[in-house]
Each structure stands twice: as C-alpha cells, then as structure tokens.
Length: 150
Image (tube, rainbow, N blue to C red):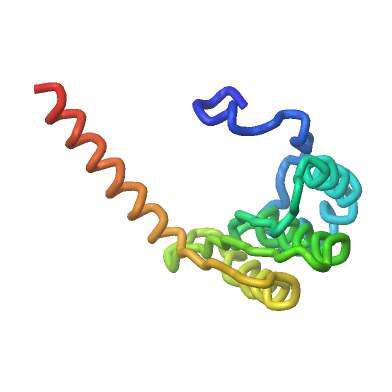
C-alpha cells in the first residue's frame, strides 16, 4: 500500500497474511480457498453493499501461479454461488510460452476448466503481450519526456 497506486485501494478490504500458493493450483483452490473463503465473501459483501445497482464482478488474475489460478477461480465459484444473477467477467493473464515455472501449463489448464464453468466472459491476455504493451507505452512516455525537456 506504500506504492504510487496504494491510494486506489481500500486497505480495510485487504485480506493479509497469505504467503502464496507455491505455484500450485490445488494449494490455492483447495487449501487457501476454503481457509479464507468466508473472509473473502465478507469483504465482497461489504463492497457490494455500497453499490446502488450491482451489475457485475470483474476478476483480474494470473493463471500461471497457484494463487491466481487456484484461489482466483475459487473466488469466481464463490461469486457464482452467492451472487448467481450478477455477471462474472475475468481478465485472465496466461503465462508466456517461455515461462520458467514448470507447473504453469498445468495451473492454466485447471484454471481454464474452472473459468468455463463459473465465468460469464473471459478476457484472455498473454503475459508477454502484456509486457510488450507496457514497454511500448513506457518507450513513448520516455520519448515525450525527452522531447518536453528540450
């Protein structure tokens, strides 16, 4: 919460104390999911109570590691169970083909299976493509700063 975007988030809605799922879908989905499910639902409930007309949920997660793939899809399942009439959109970041985490392909396959079942719409993006977009934006920003400083 100390970074430049920290003020965008309500710190009271954060669930802390989780170290990660060790690049293991099952650990995130079947371990952390049930362990923290009630805390997650309570945080979501508080946020939804502030809405005048809740239309949808938008989940951002990575599919290569265990937390994003396992816990992320567990949360999607919770949303379907608790808010069946509210749309669930997922922006899912797929690992690059040169990803060095040996479990990434497996985590992605398990997560896609869950996404098919519990998401109304999935916006896939590949990790390397996301990095390429960032680098293009950063390059233009640096070029503009050089031009402006003249």
